[in-house]
Structures are given as structure tokens and as C-alpha cells.
Image 1 (cartoon, one colour):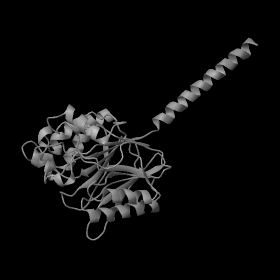
Image 2 (tube, helix red, strand yellow; image 1 turned 30 degrees about the vertical axis):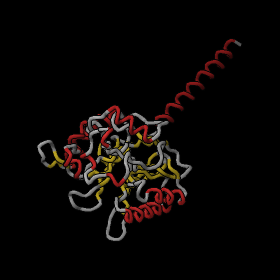
Image 3 (cartoon, one colour; image 1 turned 120 degrees about the horizontal axis):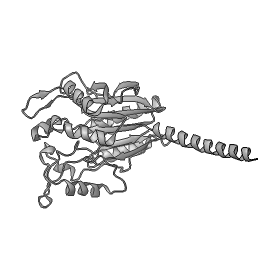
Image 4 (spheres, helix red, strand yellow; image 1 turned 180 degrees about the vertical axis):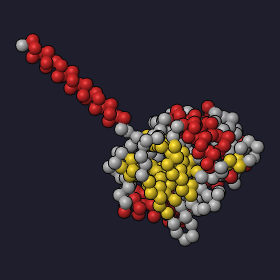
Length: 309
């Protein structure tokens, strides 16, 4: 009898251990995808806040988030160092890999010129990323999207044009690809300006059967669209009384099928912490209050996104 009781006890303990191990394995199977707009446009060089000058900040940010995959937009372009010399994308890839341990899987550009915007994907060594490049093309313009499979789901990342007509055309093509290729979710910079055709874009996405997964939904910028100057990063000092404001945008989205098994959050652009249960304008004010001097401590002029698949 005593032997049977011991066996039963051992069996129960083994069962508990099996449950714990199963839970740990299932938890570790979750893949963390970080999305960052590198803000690598001409305005950054004009303001002295170039991508090169922000690389140490970006590396530190990536290490704090600890992603398995990173998707960068505004990638592929050169930047300038502190002396104004051009730094190639190849050199920046080397710096990012040395700093984070992640390796570049692919880089695609909207065209073949050196200054073309592109999308780059980095991943942990050994993590297989099967990717496909798509062209969201119409009427003489070209916008790139990249789809890839992760944990039995297919994602697609993109950066839609600023021009509103081209943007709507690219969005329609993106939605068509998602339906035809059975893509679970899409994410990226949609340039869904609230004072532009952002509401129309969101309505089209909803009508297509997709929902927003981001914990802070919608599009916002912390000042009216018509007050954005030609080089918004030049206005990076915060001075509450004179109307100047940090050029921090939330024009990025994560949307997909209701059945998609993902969790998506926006991140604090300096600490990398998940921002939850916060009103968009409160989030803007919090960042203004904590870092009122400039934007050089932030990884981008967009809020980074973290998607767990």
C-alpha cells in the first residue's frame, strides 16, 4: 500500500513537471517582432539628428526590448556622420549586427537609386525567415511590402506613400495581396494622417474584414497637420507656451484577421517599455515632460511597435 501511495505521489509530481515544462516551451515559442521607422530621411541630417548619430541609442533600445525579429522602414539609405561624411547602409548593418547580435535577412528598396527608401528585416541567428517581396505599384510609383512566415502565421510589413492618392492605391493592393495570399496580419507605417485620408483608410481596412490589434489604436500627431513644417525634426525643443512640440507621430498600425493569434503594443520611444492603458495625448505629454530638451534620446520620430506572435 505504501509503495502504491509513493508511486501515485511520484506520478502526480511527474505530471506537474510535465505541465510546467509544456508551459515553458509554449511560452518560449512566442516570437517578438519589433517594428521601427528609422527616420532616415533628409530632415534628420538637416537637424543634426542623423541615423548615424542615433545608432548607439537604437542599439541600446533594441537590446532592452530583446526582439527575435526587427523590421525597419526608411532603411537602405546612407546617412551622415558627425563630420557630414556619408555612411553607407552596409556599414550601418555591420554596426547594428555587432551591437545587437541580430543579422540582416533581407533589404528591399522602392527603386534602384542610393537614396531610395527600403525595408530591412533582421533576425536572431538560426531563426529561419522565408520572405517574399511585393510591389504595391500603380501609376508610375512603386512601394514595397515584404511578407514572411512566423509561428505558422504569415505577416506582411510595408511603408505606404505620403501622397494620399498613391497611399490609397497602395493600401487597396496590400489588402488584395492579404486576401489572395491568406496573410494573417499586416503592420508598418501607413502614413494615416488624421487630417488627411487616415479615417478613409481605416474604414477600408475594416470593410475588408480586418481589425486593429494595436493597444493604442488610431492615428494621431500632437499638433494639427497643417502646422507640420517642411523639416519637422528641426522643431525638437519643447516650449509649452510658444506652441512648439515634439515631432512624434503615431501613423503606424497592426491589423489582421480577427482569428490572428497576436498581441501588439506601442513602445515608449526611449525606454522601450510597453505603453498600456494610456490616452494618446497623455502619452505625448509624458514624453514631453520627461525629455523636454530634444528628440536625440528617442529611436525615431514614430512610436516603435512590438508584436508577439
